[in-house]
Length: 337
Ligand SMILES: COc1cc(O)cc(Nc2ccc(C(=O)Nc3ccccc3)c(OCCC[NH3+])c2)c1
Figure 1 (cartoon, rainbow, N blue to C red):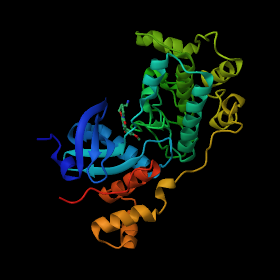
Figure 2: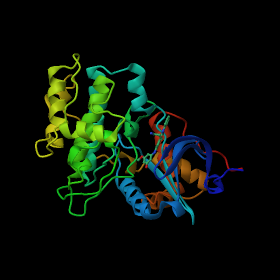
Figure 3: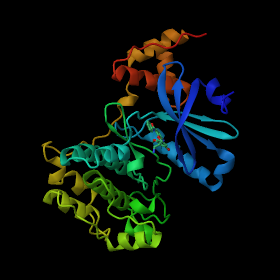
């Protein structure tokens, strides 16, 4: 019998564990009605303690965010003891594994991925959020190698907006900015830029700029900000990396400059897109028709419920049908037994 009977009764068939993190585990599952694969983050509320507010913050962030390079939220299920967050399954796995497989990526492939990260992070910052835990393990790929940022468990939405300072030291030291590991007040946007610099270095070089098994050694390297520039790096990529991995946050490149950096537009002829994306909130009559026929309820009534975006089972079914439509799968719902 499944350890999580709630999920089966909510229309999900659990499969293997695909990730474990601070707040719980992530399991692969299938949404029974649509047959679509999803990732479900399972958290035991009784064990979360002081971290429970963070979970609430992440869920409210995910409900407000809709971008092609941010892993989608489909449904939130809460019981007395557990919180289940149903999200987009990124079948391409971790970008990190993709880099290791190819040892390092070409400038063009690195740029193609990095532009998507810039697009997602500038959208995040424009909406008042800092991720604060950007690292290759939190950058996944979907079936078409589109990039998806995950794990907003450490994200922050500073009360006074993105110009106000944060203090909580969080995230993984290897990717953490100097000011963050020094425990001084910092801007979320500036620490995200540093972490993006570490990711760009990993894409281009196939290794990390600052590494050590000894945490004190690692901190010293980050605070010094000195790293090896392999011979294959072009002058444009070296210059950009120096501007991102700049120890002084005040001199570090800002997201608006990063978007317009010439290296970023090489071969594309234009900066990455930063416009607000809410394609998922559009009214798709074809998907509504499928649900309306299945429930035998008028599709305008269905839409009036779905457009409240409660992230309940109806939101999940609608968004998963939209997904199926996007990659040309038949729009059908499994017959009631
Ligand atoms: C906003 O997206 C979030 C927030 C969050 O708190 C957690 C997650 N977790 C996820 C979501 C999806 C996957 C996934 O699809 N992984 C995967 C797929 C195919 C092969 C291998 C992994 C996920 O994976 C967990 C391991 C990632 N380091 C976590 C998303």
